[in-house]
Amino acid sequence: MTENVLISDEDRVLLVKVSGLLEELVETFNILEDKETMARLKEAEEDIKAGRVRDYNDFLKELKETGEI
Image (tube, rainbow, N blue to C red; front, side):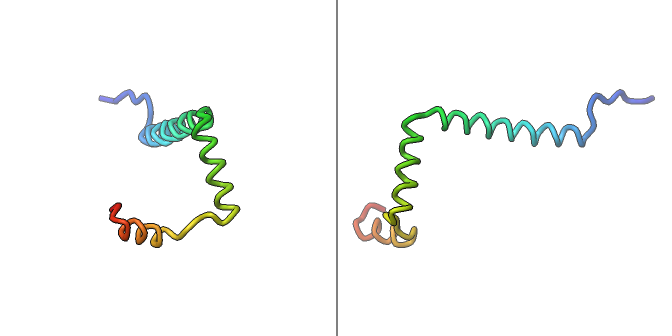
């Protein structure tokens, strides 16, 4: 008896990958649409360009010293 196969295993793998990419694209559009998030991202980029950043380990150390973590 032969099986009728609608899609191959390779096609299923491809569909899963495409589905994941589409979800990422929708999430990207949602972020781009959110004015507050975009404003905060722009501010963060300006902080980086201006050097208003610190090392992650230094940040953790500061938080521990102040008892915030």
